[in-house]
Length: 217
Image 1 (tube, rainbow, N blue to C red):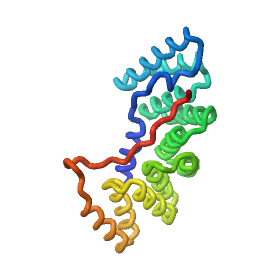
Image 2: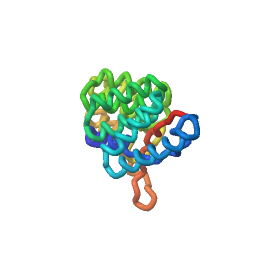
Image 3: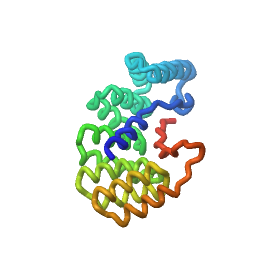
Image 4: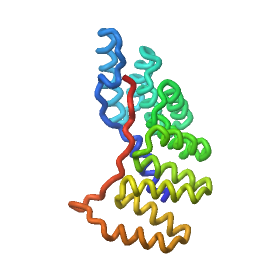
């Protein structure tokens, strides 16, 4: 189960394209163009793993707009990709303090999980779920922390919620393994039966939708 969850962690860190007008706050025209170019540099740098180039662009954005939560969140992702977890935590915490949103809190929880700070990870995931609880990936992450903390009842509840939201092979497999590991044979057989009945078009497995990072407007 841990290996699958780690894949979820790195999936959250995958860089996606953003529309510039969502990332650039309303500023004088002469700064808007410069910020747009800096975001282009940051995006390209992270896609190509040119981390120093991306970092310089993001830090320059923050010099111009020190309360840009999107830039802090992106900088946190950059540090996390390099396993610089302390700096990543600082960035996600700052992003959350500027604008509380589920994405920053979820990312913060992932880093706490990676550094085995399970109590703080649990708190971060719980806060993220209070803001946005409609995505299976958030419930799976919270379930994994509860497993580490020995809260089996809550772990099952969250995995069952994930299956309810997105009843695909991935979520069902996680719940099935959880039941098996706790010797809940009857429930495991029910889930196994559901998995066997599933038909995936074109032999392509369905994936759990990942939380979209929100940006400051």
